[in-house]
Length: 213
Length: 152
Image (tube, rainbow over all chains, first blue to last red; front, top):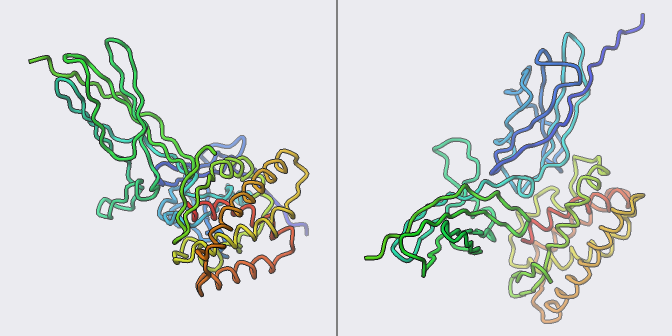
């Protein structure tokens, strides 16, 4: 007797979304289906044979799976794959492209803190930390991951609308010869030249220089 | 050249830019890697990641890998896509100029090969020769970011 072969359409757009090396696998449900579909996930290290199942992402109906822990060694590259199933029907395994955490992550803007005197403002910048498994784990700054990391800093005089740009490697910057009693707004971006990675600019931090004594 | 940087390979110091290579590779990475169905083998990182090679004779490995890519990889990477082919030849040209620069270090004996690098290079060639030429070349090209990440 013929075997009834039921297949489900494939999950779509299977890809890693990564921010500061928090690497999360995302996909879209097969066309025409909703959250009644269940999924399972596996991953593999490029160059190493076996696929490894992710137990926490077995029989799930959400369309993402956090693989940060499994892909935390950024000197390796990875593939991940998703299969959908529903009422005895199942899809093919659908793979990501090869994922390189070092080049395929997005970097958050730096943290910015500012202080002022009457004629200068001091800016302190902090690069984000690499994702870590738990708060107790040792923090690794992205500065350690990307030694060539630089900061692009924008300083705006709110009164004259004049803007300066600075590109610096260390994390502090003093902007001298400013007008007393004037508001200045600072925003900063991270720039890595190799591999080429730029964060967005941070939101503006405004501060007024002290009035003349 | 835009983005020139001083690379330190032990005693050898070379001013080079990998920016164009990076940009060229990023533009064709998905296309090239999609042509490589073999997940279980890496040319550069099997059995151990290239990153694990921290030895002082990095210059030797880099120099021989430039030779490897120029002599054994780029010429076997013709595709039916003219855009991809153009990017590959632009990357190959950049490799040729980097190879020349590194050659100067070799002439001044700053690029000696120790045991670790010799074994690693042997392994890379064995991985390469374990596949047919076109598959091996395409896989090697798809691993260019592994080399660049390690260099940088």
